[in-house]
Image 1 (cartoon, rainbow, N blue to C red):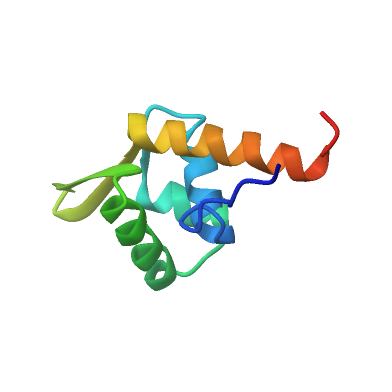
Image 2: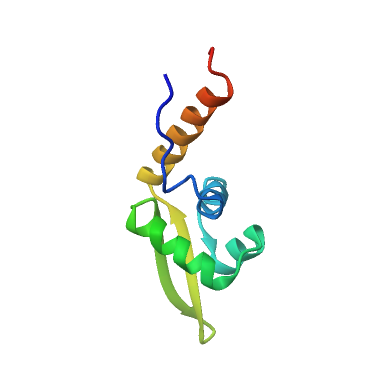
Length: 96
């Protein structure tokens, strides 16, 4: 009855990043940092894990001579998030 929850999304910070990206077309690194209240180093590590899983796309460029990292969710990431939420709902409401 209970399905295993996706270990990539089961991390609080990674789930926060993906949840945020589900609501926007794309977001820059600083927006994610402000939204999650996490450190730059920790966000960088979690972004790399999400990118390696194919859940997010990362575009790096320069804006006014400063590094600019833009993030967006992929179709795979969107599907994984929706599965995660559906599976979590089965834990919350096991009779439904």
